[in-house]
Image (cartoon, rainbow, N blue to C red; front, side, top):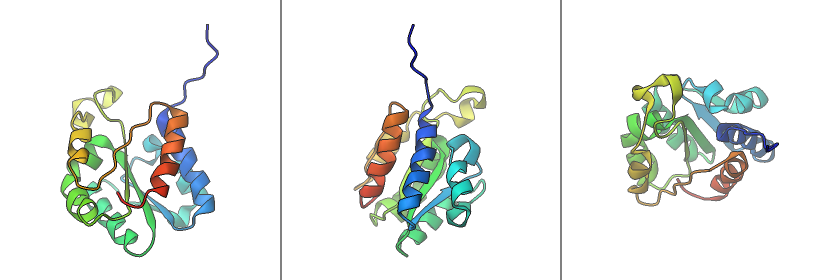
Length: 160
């Protein structure tokens, strides 16, 4: 029997944001009323002045992130895949992707494994939508460690 402890990728996301936030004061985190699920609550607790709760307004959140990036901030906009890639697609495409802004669109809960949230929270086409936006880099971690490393890689990457 293995002693390997399974840790959710979103835990790696939250932890990496906190670590990067200590080194880079230009990092801001936006969330759409899902901070406990996306684990951005870790960043919120560590840096409340750099956390923006946008409520259930994902499209607005993407436009706020776009605006912040034009002022030199590096926004990490966080939500479930259904809302970040689905509900806010036009804003991600037109306000972030086409102008090539340095916004990190971070989506958890992709695919059909969203548990009790059911079909309204499932997103099978999130990768397809994001991959067709010119200049958009798409990454998907397989575990906690990769999630931490990908957050750091996303920060180093200049662009969406």
